Length: 119
Image 1: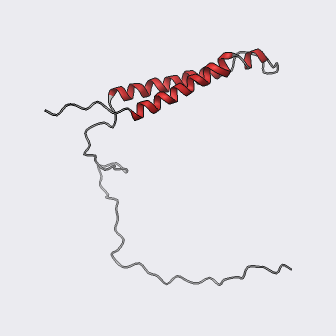
Image 2: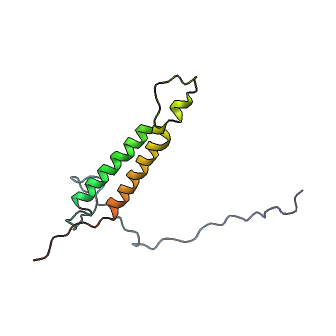
Image 3: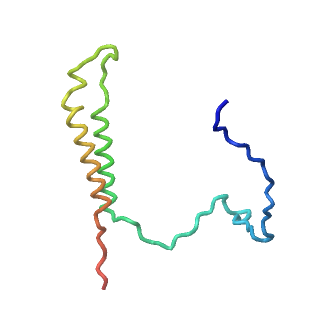
């Protein structure tokens, strides 16, 4: 018999009752609205400029191209082709392309958008 057995604690009933009127329904039931209503935004400007979004698209494309360069070939999976697996394209070119893509993404996020000159 173990010496350090946990003691059983008797279950007690909770006597806490909610205060009447303290719970309010936050869901409005209307017939013409959707079940998920998002609050309206007063912000009319985008977070980034067009050049930022273009740089993000270029970086996403570079990352996709890098992973495509790293992908496999049309060889038999039962045969180990060392020249194909350890080729320059898979070991060097693809990772460099992916890293450049991530660096361009960081540049796109950190680039300050061009603001219009106040007249």
